Each structure stands twice: as C-alpha cells, then as structure tokens.
Length: 223
Image (tube, rainbow, N blue to C red; front, side):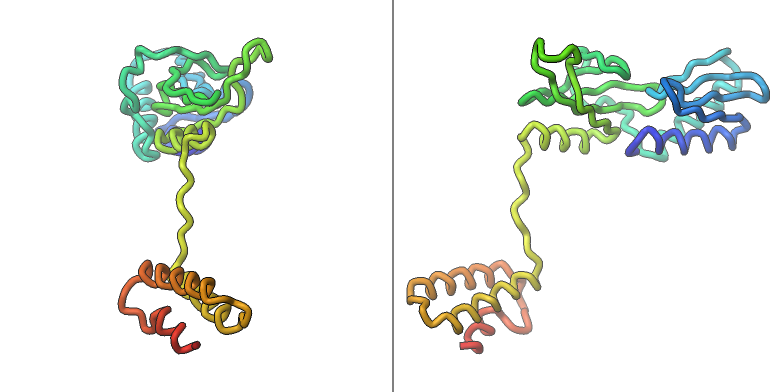
C-alpha cells in the first residue's frame, strides 16, 4: 500500500460488493459514510478509524472482513515493525498520536497502528524550540516500513549515496574515448599515457569475460 487514497478506493469497492452503500466525502476528518440500506451504519475517518452507529451482528463482521481483505490485498504492515514500541515517547500530530521511533539531525520517524491501514509511518522535521508553536512540520506519510526508514535516512543525512554504476556499453564507450584521446593528443607525455592505460586496464577487469572484442584489444588495434 502506498497511500490512504489507494486503500479507501479498494475498501469502498469491497464494501459495495458486500451490499453496503458508500457515500464518499473526503473532506475534513471524514472519508466516507457507510449505509446499510437507508440507515447510516458507520463513518470511516480520514485517519483510518471506524465509528459505528450500531455495533454487532453479521453486518459488522462483513465490514471488518472487507477491511481485512483490503489490508491483505495491499500488503499493509500488520506486525509491530520495531521492538519496544510501548516504551518510546509519544508525539501528537494533527492526525493523532504517534510513537517516536528514531530521531537524528532534527528529523523524526514516527509510527502508529490504525484500525484500517495497519501501521502508518511518518517522517517529519522538528521545529526549533520557541521558534514555532508547531513542534513538527513537513510530514511524509508511508505504509511500508522500509520506504519510511529510507526516507528518514535520506532526510537526516544518514544515507550513504550508492556508488556510480555503468553499463557494459557505457564502459566500452569510455575505453574507446580513452584510446582516441591517446591517438589524437600529440602533446600527451608518457606519464599521462601510462595513467590512461592503467585506467583502461581497470575498466577491462570490471567487464564480464568472453567479450567479442576486449577493450585492450580494441586499444591495441587503434594504435
């Protein structure tokens, strides 16, 4: 699952197929009203909660079954993603109460369990004390713990950029350019030429074997 909207769309389709009538609202704190025939049965909130007008009976079980099938179909996170969550600090955001999981360089990763979505994750920035009445801002919402942690690492500066990678064709193009550079540059001294040859040899070593024409062979032919 990527967004609340994705969940609601799938959930409401399942509810309609079960026999409920869904009136999507998507404003304020309400996502939809669910009717059993002409009677209001429950309200679905934007933050993933169910508010029943009457609770009990087969209709409630049918609705909860539709919610469970939606969570399964969208691979929602249902198991506690972090250890000792009950011992960590609680943080209040506009959408409700969250548990603070990690904090670094003014960036915070929060987590909470919702009735509908399973676990919801938020990364946000921490406001400086006395500079703003709001403690946190620039929230990014996630429903996949791996994506949430990646976003936290990136925003807090803890993520190490992946090294550059080149395709086979790109490496061969680089070798070709090096060879032509050596051929055409009459002012290149022996030290520079030796350095280029060393670089070409290292590129050749990184290429897979059984090439129809190795970079070294190509360079020698050009010479």
